[in-house]
Amino acid sequence: MLWRFKTQATALFLDVKSNYSLDADKQYAIILSPALYWVKRVSLPVKHIRDAKKLAPSVFEETLPQGNYSYDAQKEAEGVFLLFAYEDKKILDLLLEKNIANNSVRSISFAQEILDDDEKYQLDNERVIVKKEGIVTILPAAWFEGLQALDMASLNMPKKSIKLEQFGHIVETKTLYMGALLLACFTLLLGVEYFVYSEQKATLEEEKTALFSKYKLKPTMMQNRAILAHYTKIDKEQEHLRMYLKYLEKIVLKLDEHIEHIRYKNHILTLTLQGVTNQESRRVLAVLVKNSIPFTKKFEKEKLFVEIKL
Image 1 (cartoon, rainbow, N blue to C red):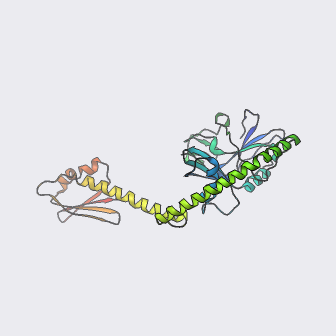
Image 2 (cartoon, rainbow, N blue to C red):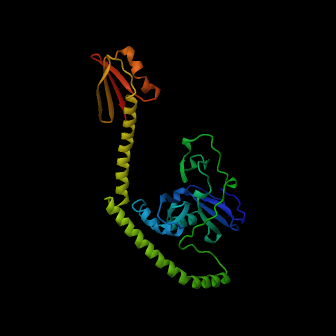
Image 3 (cartoon, helix red, strand yellow):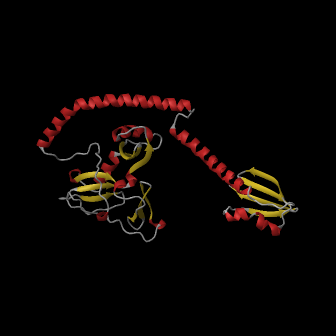
């Protein structure tokens, strides 16, 4: 898929399944398919993108398949970042496979930047590209109907670019001399930044260790996330249980009617009522119907049994 940049670079959506008809005289801006990188939204105790980028390897710990990854970061809000992980060699090999020369590449960016949230477009007969809550994915086209084809000319073009290791550009000798001069000027600054980073990293590690010790957390984030998911599920169930009990308190009974038993077991809340006839059950259970609470009822030995599944 091709479109024009203001800088006269022609953009290509780089994907394993895409085929191109290339012009050797053109420069290309590469947009990486989400199949070529990993992304996470995280909250970090840092202010700057460069600090978030340095923490990315630990954030992706135990998540990525075996490989040699590079990392990038984008700031969404104060303390909130999008972190990216990608394999330079995998992208370089794909460029070579698609016959895209290194000196024809102007820039390389993530598909994350070309779509607004909740946008979705048809890539081809089998695939759709979707952005939801800031994350871009490719999904089967069979899940959607009536989508427009991806028109790159109408989308926001990326302003940021990543650099790949071992990615060579043809440059003039004058540019090389200027680069060498700049490198010499920044050597001292880089040394200072490394010292500051080392201090920040040590501080963060100490804070991390203190937090893990204080709250008796597991040694890895995967274990902690599993525990969080377990207790989150329990909390949701208890929240529903409290809500249902609140509605049961609103049931209006006559003098000869009473609640004999309330039991909660195996995710089922059971209510046993004595003295309620089939005709009167509609009145008694009206509060559940009004609040759209799903339930089943049955009569047995002059008793009304009501079951609510959580």
